[in-house]
Image 1 (cartoon, rainbow, N blue to C red):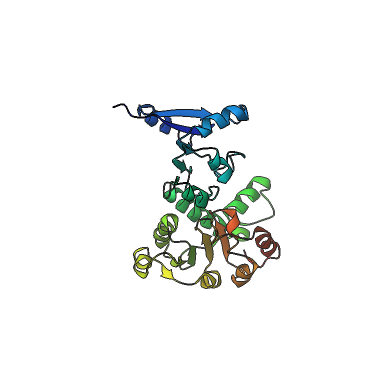
Image 2: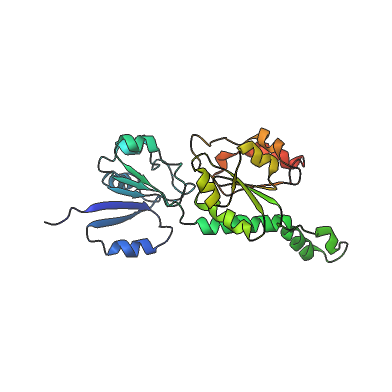
Length: 265
């Protein structure tokens, strides 16, 4: 008996085009690329008939094709929605669950890259790499190397909010610099903290104790707006705030104010 064809749609492009090559060998999957420039009628016809919907990154997907209740009502065949990366905050998970639609993400796929990026940012900040580079390019006179003297990571404290795929790799990399690591994550055990090389502390303790605060948790109803002015006020004036997570987790206006007033580095 021949397998029923499953329709898989996506807009514009895949994050990695190798997916199209892989799926080309799947005889029971009909892959269809859609374009925002095409008519809404044409796109809706394809989406409404889809069994699977591969999403673009959060800032690239456009309404009305966001995976919420309005779209679900028009897609009776939809079985699964897949996010491009680890974040899935643009998906109405509750509506998908009620409709029996699977929601999948790519958790951990870029964990190593993000962890290394955070360490890179820490080095750039504490070593004043960006400032000294700009000064050398602008004017060779009127300053000395002592004006841009950096500090080591050695012996300093890294505070990680969310000790998951990214956070655990950051903890491992930080040990190469002989840093102390503290972390906050309500969803892992004491044994997990030990295995990942971090001391469990509260969120407030991270902001009080850390020389670098790194946000690495997902954006959801629990974490939206979780960090605000009160937390920035707990930080040392020499401490740095780094986030590679979704912006909605922290209050950006309060962060800008704290930076502008010189209350944190």
